[in-house]
Length: 95
Image 1 (cartoon, one colour):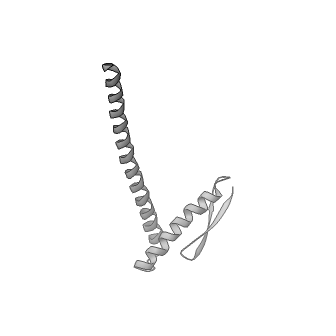
Image 2 (cartoon, rainbow, N blue to C red):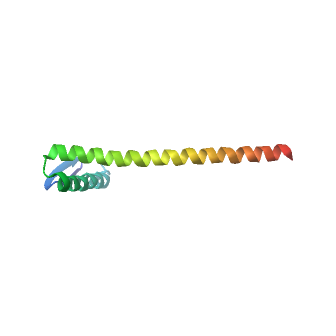
Image 3 (cartoon, rainbow, N blue to C red):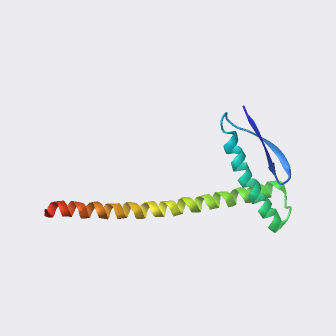
């Protein structure tokens, strides 16, 4: 099983992953590492576990916000499509 070395808060961690997922694990780990650095800069070194937990929550919150925004846009698009389909159906009926 491949392993990826990641640096979070100045410490190197070895993360096991499935074959072919090394790049993705490295990328996701870098997102967590960036958040940890930003949080540590604001609140100080409050412990690796707490920093990583806060970073994970922050990253998940950002992801959930994007999902929520996408869902709203999809719903709006679906509603607009339904209106267009209704208008086309009415137009065909009137012809």
